[in-house]
Image 1 (cartoon, rainbow, N blue to C red):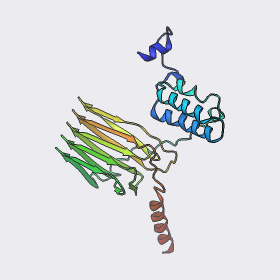
Image 2: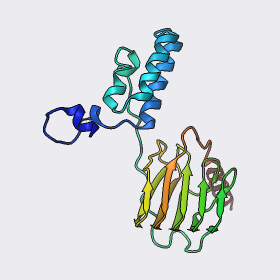
Image 3: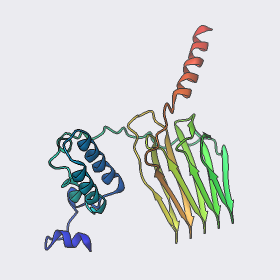
Image 4: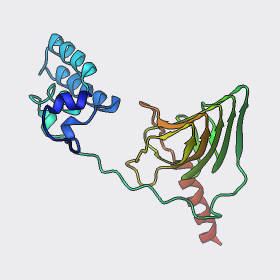
Amino acid sequence: MDLQKQTGTRPAAEPRGTELRASDADRDRIADILRDAMAEGRLTAEEHAERVEGVLAAKTVGELEVFIRDLPAAHHRAAPAYAAAPGRPAAGAIPADPDENVVAVFSSAVRRGRWRAGRRIHAYAIFGSVEIDLSEALFEYQQVVIKALSVFGNVEVRVPENVSLRGTGGGVLGNFEVDTLDAVDPDAPVVYLDGWAVLGNIEGKPKRGRLVGDILDRVHRKVDKSLRKHLDR
């Protein structure tokens, strides 16, 4: 295995931070630092191109750090302060009936673009494919529950990077995968993806580069308006 080759004869143990496999997000972070360094004149165009090529080929976090260890940004990065996402909605807090059903039976169904995300969405993929893209959706509620069932099918949920994402579920000869995401803003919406994949696939992931702006402004304005009406009575 690659990890064993990198560690040599060192006894098997939990990998240190630099030995962890690099993700696409890790590579993007290093590439951003290199781009800024070139813009500041710290790297020439040739040096930048050479290092970016190495970043794309790097397999571990340690290999990535080599390309920025002589740059100031590598020594002054502050970890973002993520807020814990709210707990799961209490029983009865969200209606049992879905605001919307997205169904694909021997077909495909897609929900994307500018649309209003309800509090509960049910997705069914039976020998079919369902795509739910929330990257441009209008969030009127802080908590959104997506119940998914895949039978010989595929359900994909994509969320913008400034919301929180949680998942609970499993697979029966299938795959259930949710990339947990924590928003910096404690008031940001939280999407809960629950489901079962039977000989199928269910996955939830952030859509890189997509951010929902002013996601809760409408809710705040409605609350403020209601409060003003109540106080004026």
